Length: 74
Image (cartoon, rainbow, N blue to C red):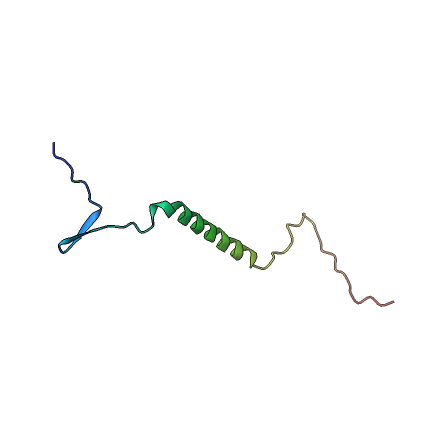
């Protein structure tokens, strides 16, 4: 059986070998994803609460709104 080549976490630039570094330090991955989720939730909260209030409802069947007069003369 042929042995599979293991991928090296190093790359060669010219004659020097440079170790690849991950984009996010593995020690901080949980913190990174927690912050991302909290930011997304904050954005949803802000978008949801900046819209105008919807009309009150739903009204029961046969409901007729009563008009209130504000100019009552005595």
